[in-house]
Figure 1 (cartoon, rainbow, N blue to C red):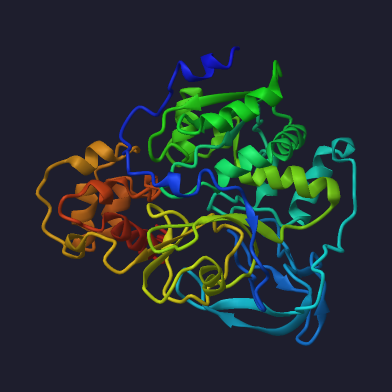
Figure 2 (figure 1 turned 90 degrees about the horizontal axis):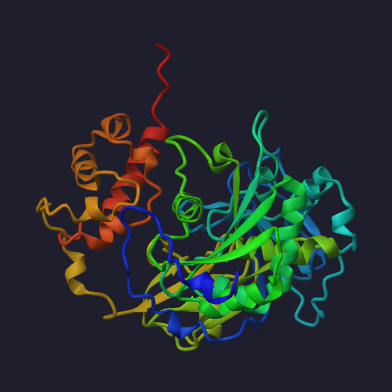
Amino acid sequence: MSFLSLFRRHKTFSHGGIFPVEHKELTAGLAIRRLPFAPLMVVPLAQHKGAPAVPLVAVGQEVVRGEPIARAEGHVSVPMHAPATGRVKAIELWPTAEGPRAPAIVIDVYEAASQEVLYQDEVDVMRLTPQAIVDAVKDAGLVGLGGAAFPSHVKLRAPEGKRIHTLLVNGCECEPYLTCDHRVMLEQTDALLRGIRIVLRATGAERALIGIEDNKPDAVAAIATRLADDPVIRVQAIAAKYPQGAEKMLIESLLDQQIPEGGLPVDLGVAVYNVGTLAQIGDLLPSGRGLIERVVTVSGPGVGKPGNYLVPIGTPVSFVLEQDGVDGDANEVILGGPMMGMTVASLDVPVTKGVSGIVVYARGDQDQQARFVFPCIKCSRCVEACPMHLNPSMLGQLAQKRDYARMESDFHLNQCFECGCCAYVCPSNIPLTQYFRIAKAINRERPVSTE
């Protein structure tokens, strides 16, 4: 396949989606730089889907960078590693982006320490058995770095009776402002391809398809050049449209298949991984190290020095903003992108494994009209924008009536993955995505019928 042919077909999903202003020019051309170490690191024990990790350290104990400080609790869980050399100051409740305080290990960082990673054990990964690779991924504390933070090792083994034949690599990064994945593809290409080959071995998949939005031609070229005529790994440019990077949308765009309602990618024989996750697998596993830092895009109109930074896990958001020229005029701070990210109420919240970006708005940046919510005018824009073929207008009306059960039973609420397209296009500024999140949370707490 010639390089030009990668751009001839702009595949995309069939229904819905939007084209928000990208704002990627702020950081897309800026190389990854290392952020200084904060004097205090906060490592939450629950920064992944599944059971929280269990502390291995005690208050007052010295730890070195890379040392395991919390063990995984069960299969759907991952361990934590010290992001810096220092002393455990406390194990206590700490603010989270979700709102409630949660247990965290607080580390006083030694200012004079070299911060060299001392915990590592080099290994020839491609000689490991598939199960040994799964164990190594778990021991490294790896989770989905695209934002979902689902333990990476869980997806490496298909359930009984299923088989993974295709690895889909998500290089879309369709959220506005975010460019950390873009820079990883450009600067850590070899680690990414090594991670893909490791996962192919672990899963037994026969091929890998890398999907990259066509607004990143340099990333497509960088990977295509390394692959040459590789018969197993292929890169494909796909149309830049939000939410192209969602699992269900990516599978439809690249494979022309749809995940059945209530199903998972593995039901189609597919495993989906973010490029950042795979690059970390390719970098950490050969050296036997744990995940202690990640690339984070810091951007937005309220940021004085936007860029892509290598940030230690556990760095307080307040410290990141101080380093990047954010003054006291910040009005809103979002972890992740502006479409699916979470606004934080406290800047004491630390950067966790799933934080791909920090977007900052200053006072006066956003449309003041958006503060007012008006009645639904039945324009159907939300229906046209929904990539899951749902009726957000009806779901929103049921949410206002608190008829949460009917939202789920009759209007497929659980098919919504909260991409925010409906709220983005709504001329009445109805916060539909927030309504749906609340409805799901309430439905999860409902007693299960025994009839």
